[in-house]
Image (cartoon, rainbow, N blue to C red):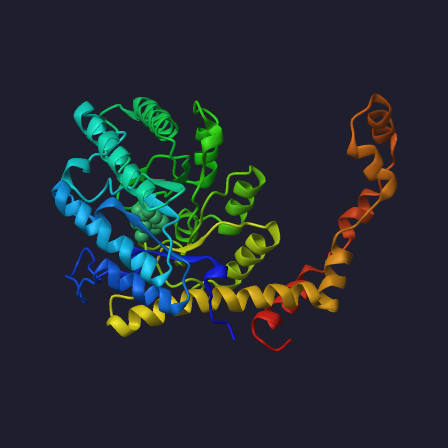
Length: 386
Ligand code: GCO
Ligand code: MN
Ligand code: MN
Ligand code: MN
């Protein structure tokens, strides 16, 4: 009946269900809810875990004693309600100190503060049991390129990531770091804007094995790209370390809509990819209730994200078991034993035979692959009439 359980591994950020509805034009529309209360409510809905930025839990100006008391109370709530903290991250975007970047600030003092703050936040995450550390460079970017830091910024970013990986290893934290690309907002142009950019950058790090991706549905969509395609590339590279699920209209401001709310067909192919690839990590909903909503709307939002995922997971199973759909797919994917033997492995003999082969180019160009019929079958399955 599409009721989530912890085995489904659904997670939310404290900042998602805790979002108060503030936007650049208007004040909060909902009161802030305390972290232990969010834990209690998420557990009651069937979530698996909760993720956090350092300052979602501990105010940036808390004393050591205040920090310890807050962390103790939070840990108590986690153990009372059976929730885990699989992922932690750093707020390197709210404080004005980071207004022109954190690891890529042109000010060496800001870069040093960003490293220091992140190491403290890694300590916090490790204390809470997190094994994934997300790095979203929200302020790592520019509006103005006249400062001439484009190449320096990439170097500073790389040095910082190398430093943090060494810190994690030296402390025995064993974190896997997940870079979260986003093309813009809050900066005009954010560095490493897409999944592909982040994959390329990881290959230049000292410990590429420790770094992977935290792709987000809305972020690739804002860049005008297909999220399933981006996620497939991350999976292919063995780099899907975490995932942020939400929804978004293309060409708009960062909307953080309920999962599946805008593009259910894209969400279906994403769920299909995750389920069939054997992705075993948490499914994290990085979204929030509409600004119009009260607290009841927040829980309707959270329940809706999880239900939509489970409904789509059921559709994925129906798709796999639908004889007409599977026959259409089998017809679409043409096999040729003789040619596949020649293309499978390069040998001079295979290459020679392939070059000598007479292809019926006209027949290749006239074949109808049946995609219209297959897509309509998919739509009818999604629309609930199959
Ligand atoms: C955004 C981002 C953030 C990050 C979060 C965790 O668009 O604001 O998606 O929500 O995911 O900071 O690093
Ligand atoms: Mn986002
Ligand atoms: Mn956002
Ligand atoms: Mn995100």
